[in-house]
Image (tube, rainbow over all chains, first blue to last red; front, top):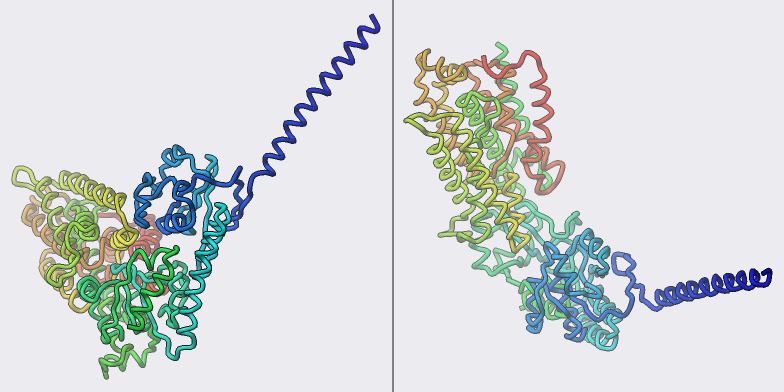
Length: 304
Length: 335
């Protein structure tokens, strides 16, 4: 009887030990699994954990779509936003609403990662997507070099370093060449670029355009740093800036929509000299792989 | 005697605020520069140009629009015998907003024959909506104030809903900025070519109603008593409606729908001069103009260079004063 009790007790202990071992092993496996995932930090300092290298991705901005199509295998890009129009291959992808974010549609697409840029996707939307298990990676650009680094970052995350680094390096070389051509120019051209006419909104100092102009030896006429990247300005402020060059539309278009509304601004130097140009919206607005194309377009306006 | 003192004080304050306002802008300018700009104007000097062609019309437009809205608010409150009435009761503001928004969203060309269309369409929207509200408020050859009020609210809501729908469906951030800027009011579009429209409308209306102050005071006793006291109620109401729709229409078309002024300034006037003062309307216009000038100046000092939307400032500074006025025991809406 006593032996039986000892045997039962030993069996019970063995069972407990075995159970604990199995549970312990499972826990260890989970830790290993976590260790096997990837933790990345985006440009806003947000840490994102990815269980594996992402395979199903898309961009929440049209510029990001251009970046992805330049770096990632097309098969890995699973959607586009309504504004995406470049490259032509983007039209083969299903449209997903980014404003407001169609959460159900995004969930149905099962992306491993969504790329976006600062200010283009509200952080609350990113947090909600994170709760649903979809990480959102933000990039932030202040300079042309930031965009080139952004290309390299996407390449690293997507396992396409070779393609991305090659693209970034070739673009970097072109930027350096342009920079060398226009370095130390006396009396740099003062350029004012409007984004909207009523009220008057312009490209502020803390936008990528300021760096593009610097590369070309010119300056953004807006020297003051405002809270908004694209501040509203008064007619008097623009009269005081007195830019050499005005960008934002053709002479004919701005005559109809801008100068007819604000005839006082016909006193600025750019109007008197007829230096009014219409940059291509998709080029000047989008921080992407066509950034050098954008700088060269500006070069054509500034130094015809 | 007090009445004359109040008038002198209002005029003095208007002059002081205009002089202060002339000094606020992107170009640095002290009193000497301002005096030089007027006495020895040099068109090639951009500071002179800014003072004469940008700052002065802006200040005068603020003065005129403030005066117009306060004046129309006084008329509307007298007409419907209700202290909650304001110039936008007839749907003028929402009609004007809808007109402007239709242009911003591309339903109508932004510029036709060199004319910038948002103010033109705002004016048209204001008139069309006012006409619809008046038709709905008209029954058995008489204007029914209660019906007019309800029609105004209903049509305004419809216009606001259409504006909301267009805004929601907007495909560009710029369009949204235009709508927001328009809906909160601004004097940034002021110019010497724009100023005469609201100014002439206001001056004509002030002259017309200078002879009707007595009828207005009696109208505030209610239509039956006014009729018994010999006032031609129907005629007076039509005169008020026509005046309010034209004057408010011009004010909104040039500066956007600026709230609160038309509601509170008539109360301030009655609080200071009494409910049956003979020169209440004129004083109301002066105080409205002064209040708007002050709000515009503050908005530009607080948030340079564009200034905060003027509607925000009128509410921030108007509400505390309004609450104080209403809490005064000796103030009442009508006699």
